[in-house]
Amino acid sequence: MGLLDNYKEDSLGMAPADYSHYIIIDALYLYLSANIDRDKYKVQQQTQIIPKLKSGKLPDVIVYEMKEYLYDDFPLIFIEVEHTKEIPDTWKNLRESVKDNNLKEAFLFDYKKKKWHKYYDADQIKPTKKTSSWSDVLHLDLNNYIPFLDKRLRKMMYGF
Image (tube, rainbow, N blue to C red; front, side, top):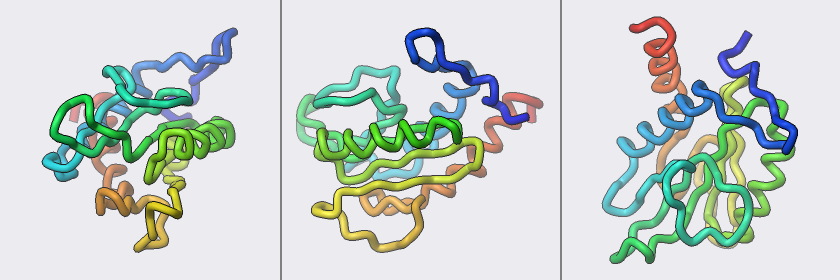
């Protein structure tokens, strides 16, 4: 049984984010914050104030391009974390968000299979690698996040 197998939607169709889901998102946030160029980019979680989104569901993590003023930051990348069974619906919404918000890339992490899915705007990005975990914007392989996540989950569950 996986850590988030008990993830269920309520009567409004909203999936309540349980503690484990927040741990996975928080680990991703920490990993990105430590591994991106913070002079160029800023990372925010869904639980923080998210400016300048045109439409769609708030993603779990957003990467912004840093501008001179706080309110001039523009989203570049959306990242969603989902269970395998939620991937098709989230993938459709994520693709629409890329177009609606003029994003360069979007990633969907299937935490059950530990697999990345990537969508990008072909007018803005020319992919340099053929892996679905590679960010051409950040020049970072998101697969490197998985051992970091595993270590945090082990620490949370077993204390080491």
